[in-house]
Length: 363
Image 1 (tube, rainbow, N blue to C red):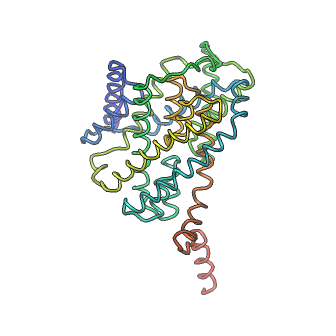
Image 2 (cartoon, helix red, strand yellow):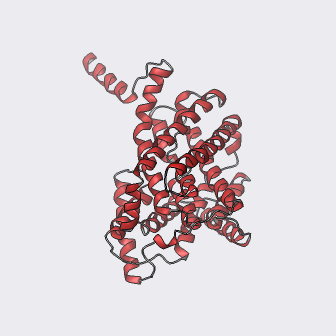
Image 3 (cartoon, helix red, strand yellow):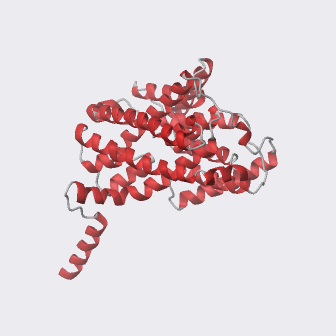
């Protein structure tokens, strides 16, 4: 198994270096992702451990938190209505996708619902298992969704020559060895606590929260060395590409084709919705596109950081959306099953409790 990890790292690194040489947008992320996905699909025996994924997420969470000084926090507070609008929009995207997937993807509604929700793959797969949906199909749909969005948006922005000038919002500009060690310790403790509490995206949100608290209170520890964010992006790309395998597209080709179509449509809707928000707000259009796109928090925040497109706002959009979707996806599923499809859905937990009570009475 260690040999597979080494092979996977070498392939991911080769992909990143090749992408840098070819001037591909987000080279350290997209290069590692594409080469890993292609080689895994071709049957190359490589692997990526969760440790690398967690390390990549730690880098993202910690580096993003360095942008949240008091001025930026005020900007986010002033734009809360638009962030809330983005939350509702993400919910509508999920509903739209689930209806498309149910009709043309030939799967049951519960699988279509959790596969289309704009949330984290692991959290949605867990909810799918809880509600007896096809967790494997749900995980596949989210993997395809993320890779489509991650690859598509940077190339569109590069083609349109869209970049920003938000680098000045990062609060820490120097490297201090002692401060860097303290930063690693504090953020890692937060990540472990979030993981222990089984909170979603624990290695992004734990370090992010700690760094925001420090930066927002003008506590300066250290800047991350430039090599660290690159390595973090490589780890994220490697872990995303590792989800693919020789049988990925053979499992359910019709289903995955519909997933791809649905996400392309959602991406187009995100561009349109972002333009509407752009007309009524002071937020730049590219920042809104990244904030409302159906990608993951880590991937879209990386894109914003590299392209200097309003990192704090993009992060705020995605964090708010992630929490909102996680809270409402389960309850809304019950409502759709009951009132839209006319099914009398029975909560599996309540069924189990009722069964135990019945067994006690009979004994």
